[in-house]
Length: 209
Image (cartoon, rainbow, N blue to C red; front, side):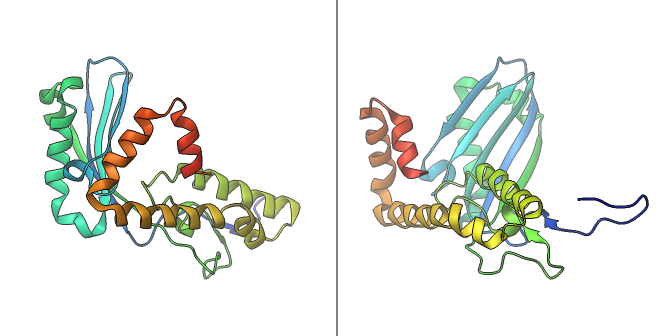
């Protein structure tokens, strides 16, 4: 887009993040001497309905649990259980000296993809999130790309989103329903499917198609 020097560019995109929360995260960032390492775990005692993770790179570590809003009162319990679960890969003293943090996300299939100023809602400002386990980064990048295409190529933003993202989000919503319907069988079923598969990535592709 072109503009004259000193002329204010019109706001076209809203990427301010979620205004409401239906999934939450709690974790600790810490300094560590441990080598690079990436881990993820699932279980009702560490991240009910979602997942926990441990990421270590270049002397910095992050350990966190992700869970639904209805389990907010279990957040400290989930975090401590996550630390204990990953105890073979961390120095608990380093974790204890780290800094706690919290975060939140929002899943919603919106009918209106613009804010009150007419700006396109991208990322979690537009509710673009995965409803199964909360892997929303791909949706954030894709929605930003579609916003750019709408500005540059004059394609309707709603059309691009409905054509490319809404079906995926509806699919993730069905995944969440199936996962919660399975109850206590959900994690064992997921584990055995992945353990028995010769191509686990293909299974994930089916989930995140």
